[in-house]
Image (cartoon, rainbow, N blue to C red; front, side):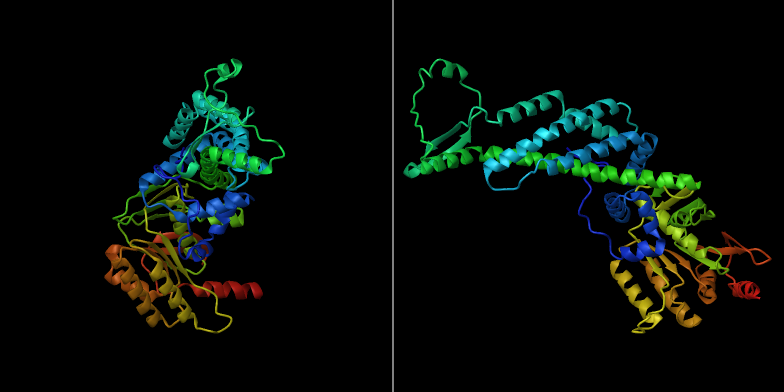
Length: 496
């Protein structure tokens, strides 16, 4: 059995490695706040959320597959919670049954039988849930899972499992077939089904050809030989029983992990709902043409940190592979940059996004290059540090990533910084990247506005005539000032 709740046609890789440079991505976008909201204090759910959110998908159809399952979870949360609880109960069986891993067939069989006996009630509950929900499911993922459970855990299978477990108790002893091989060594040992031959026993085994040898309880060598025969006879059955346990527990671990992602998404949705933040399921577009439109887009991480609603922004960058964000200091430029990156990450893992509408093409990873604090050890200059991180990013990106640059290369003079940034941007654009660039460099923005205007969208932080910031970003050409005098005046007016 397979869950197939995170992918339409394959199981999620539970031991998947986190993508390169994920630490910078989480730090720069503030994704830790999103992951903590999904976990809601549960360490396991935090691990699941981090693994799935950062893995991302590249196929729009696979993204929509998750969206539809999540929509059903939000509409009928009790179904996901029941599935998760049953998976947790099954995994707990392994601990409570004291399952052992040994090469001793006798101990292995006994442990497997004990575990399967305790799993039986969970399997019956799972079947009942499947019967109740199969016809009500609205998503292909849940409908297929429940139909699989009804088929694989039908009445005949459950009855057969109960009967086999009863027989493997060996209340009448173990009956093993075998024959003599070369040099009279025993070979071809196989376990006989217990309980057969009842009429022969009642009739004194008349007509049966063979001999019976009884071994004295004090005959240590004889009893050791019988024990060896028993273990050789039950070895195949012990292996089969252990594999059955592994298969069932593997299935429940997968259910716990995959449904755990949706529980985390439900936790996040509830938190955002209490803040009054809008959420919507985005429209993922295939790779090949730059697409990015949004209405009411907010930085979800900021909302979670502040505990209040954030200002939403609209943008239309369809067909634009480079977005420049310029304008007044503290006007919301970095916030919009994080909002775009967070929405892209959330979209590509199958989550809703913080917006009333969002559509973007899928990208081969999301990478950030944000300004860092000064190196306290003075082992290198800020520009050296920026270039080192840029080199690491070049090594990590595939073809067609989304790059988010926040005041990169501002550690040198404006002309040199503009030269570096221009070369970097053009090289990445040639490689199929989409770039969103927050910059205070008028020289850099001016060059692209003059020479690359057709492929760029220019947004500018809104500033009212009295100097107040609205934290809205509007389309507009770059200006040669960031209105630093507003901050200067505000600081010194406050001090005076």
